[in-house]
Length: 329
Image (tube, rainbow, N blue to C red; front, side, top):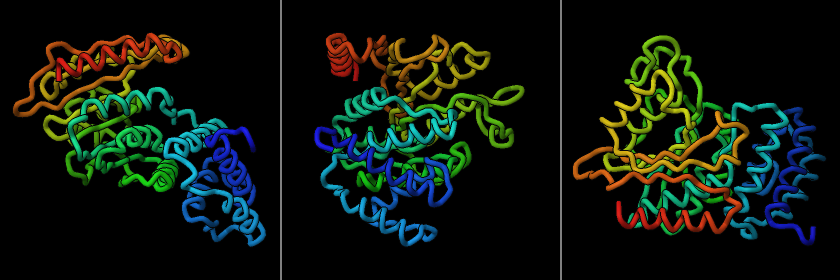
């Protein structure tokens, strides 16, 4: 595979072994990705249901994998490609993966807002396959970071777990409904690509201030409230939100809640070119939980991001963000 990047080489290995496991175990491709990730971590096939012949075939391939030959970002991106293939094959469109460029930008923002902190605790309450959280952690390598990932989908949590192990990240994973009681300590930061839609459990929703007066509540509103609950005073929250967040009938209630409990730090609108339609556009929304001594910024960071391919324009915007942080934080 001379001339291939490390990401391509590792994806090829993951893909080849996942296809073998998929055929052997009669499972979906994405389930096979989770299994082969576990095998890569252990250095051998660990599934009891795999025949001896197939196990030997897999192990011959796994022997070509040397963890120290790959960076964390190369591992993350290779698994991202495999998970994207699996989500497409299994038609799991409900699980949209956060775009790579957005993951990197969010990591940059977390690093900048916490540049003076040496120790951090980070929560992603909709962790999915762990792609966003691990991308953020890869940009905080100079800090001591512990993190928590929560998701209701057990398969995605398994993928996130094996991916985190291979990247040697300290992440506690919980396979549960993130809107129910969480047995965790308050965190310094939340990063979350908000699940957008309706939340069907009225018994759980009734415990939230942002519950709907009638019918199903918005899941993304409840995720915002839950995240604020489990953030320390003065902690920051970095959400990927739909641009129409403040245009719904429930928006006034959300506005009041945010004014009472948080300080708005910034809103970065992602490039139009990233989305299929105007209705599907998203932004990065940065909040700080109120607490003693918390002062609002002199002005909110409002940014309309250019295409990420426009390096000159993007560099100019990053300089503006750096200048905002110097004068407002």
